[in-house]
Length: 227
Image 1 (spheres, rainbow, N blue to C red):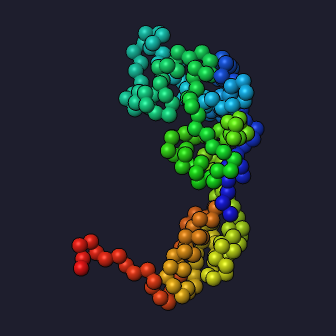
Image 2: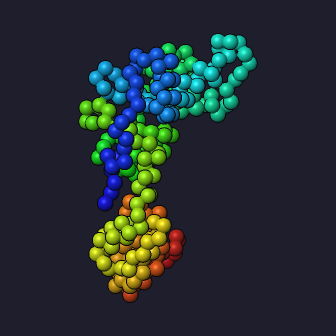
Image 3: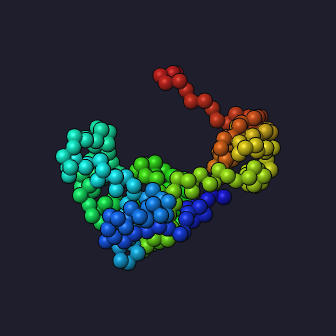
């Protein structure tokens, strides 16, 4: 089984319209206890994401208004200029969610594998992904915390799934989501495939290889420059 975003996403989502004012955005983030939320247009389509970091741009760039000598550190200035948060100075002037948001939003779909969502978050340095239907309308949200739920599966459930994937051709034990495979295969390639199949099961933390094989049908690659 490969879990999809639909299996772990949250459907009750704190959202804000792009025309909502700064104060409304701040109140929603605090009252809903979230660090970011999707920004929608009037047709419920996701047009961006607004986060605590977006609102804090006003504080970070307050010298623009109050004349103090604060200057964001270099790392923050680089992030604001080219990172996922966009231009910090532009956001410091924002008055609405549409001004403050990061756009376009990085989104995923309900049928996407959770590993794809995790890679998308890592690639773009974001903590959450709005989940949209084919028309771009919001149906949920998935966070890093949601994605790690897959590692809370019970050992017995994982063991049953690994046994089914291997068709009973290896002995399987699972402890704290670590799978140990023992037994003997006819070919080395079969053992390698078994390890790969076990490792691909959702919730598996690691696979310990205690397999043997009778025939090595995967010859070692020759040394570079060898005969």
